[in-house]
Picture 1 (cartoon, rainbow, N blue to C red):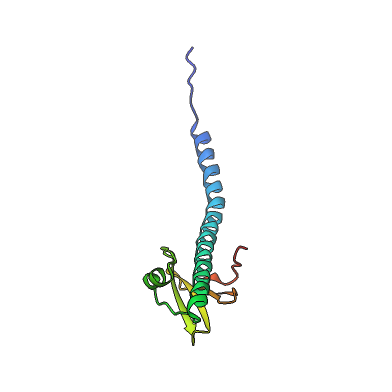
Picture 2 (picture 1 turned 120 degrees about the horizontal axis):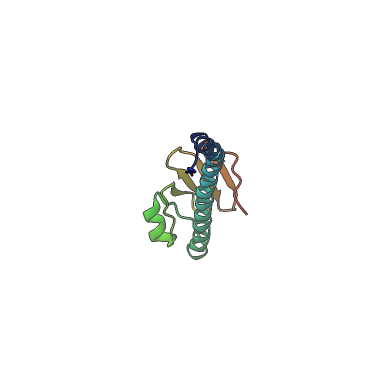
Amino acid sequence: MSKKKGFTLTEILITILVLAVLAGIALPGFSNAKKKAAANQAIAYLRTIRTAEKMYYARWKTYQAFANYTDIKTDLSAEVKTADYTFDVTSTSGTAFTATATKTSTGGTITLDQDGIFDATGSEVGYAPAS
């Protein structure tokens, strides 16, 4: 009497079906978590820029505008490089500034001003920064 061991085709198909359903449920959640993580990283960099601008203002009594990562790093000594966002700082007569993180893939923006007020547009609308 030989007894064969193994899985039937039905058992294998049911297992594959269950795994496909679980993957279908998990992937959208993962994508959303990845987007939030990138936005949180951009917000942390904006806070770094704000702190550096405040220190710059304490010394020179003016806020400075910066067009790109290299200028921010060189003049403010702030490390803000990321693949998901680009950063720039605009200044109004040296008395106010707005730091902007622009998502490279969608163009959505997150801004932070000298008073610490956040704003978001585009694909970032509705995203509340972590405290």
